[in-house]
Length: 108
Length: 86
Length: 153
Image (cartoon, rainbow over the protein chains, first blue to last red):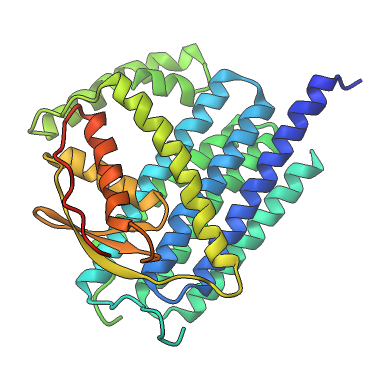
């Protein structure tokens, strides 16, 4: 028999997955729709990292174990740091290669 | 296996496949690199979700390794692979 | 680092026999490779920064997600040059990486005393917003900054 508390935690867990899935989708849509490498980086770095954070949070709620939750948090922080650094490196390389940023009014 | 976790994993996989469009369209090497970065993040998420679904802590470590490799690939790409005009 | 190892091995104390010496060795090697003394992060500042970062990185994700999904795709991007006030390389790198995760800003090139920032939508007080983030990073390292001169996007 599921208690009310179990139902509540499961509800929170699934809501976090749904929100995470939404941001993964938005990140990919941005990667396809946005007009240049810089704007695509915005979508990838911010939306996908938030998506992963929400999925990790949902998994932590499910696991209900502090040490697993800590490990999930560490993995998320690692991806955040690596993602932000990778994002900077690609943006800087694009600047160095003189990739002009897209401006409004240009064809996408 | 909890069907919700299965559905979540399948959905994340679909969003990763969208990234293939960007590999095809490019236009530059940097744009294709973005798809690789996308596979990195979605790969971590997939490993973690599947680890929970099959109840294997080892698969969680796969997620950790994905996260570490993601950092290295971007550095390697910028330092070695991409030159202007490609 | 030993604490991190403990979390990675999911609380397996037997793994500490391998992990603890490895963590110590890694710490010593990274200290040897890093010539300058690392700036000290203030615990209270870290807590405040973590709260600020969490709230605004969520805002950042929502902002870019909506822009990507809206059929009209409302963006007006530009690259602006921001004059840095933060001293020290470590603080600047933290600032650079933080900006890329917050709403509408993406660090493109860290110069000697400037930072090129790619702005997703030039409407609004972008420079003031960036200056507020810089203040937060300064607080993390216990530094006080003069008010930013501001500037148009």
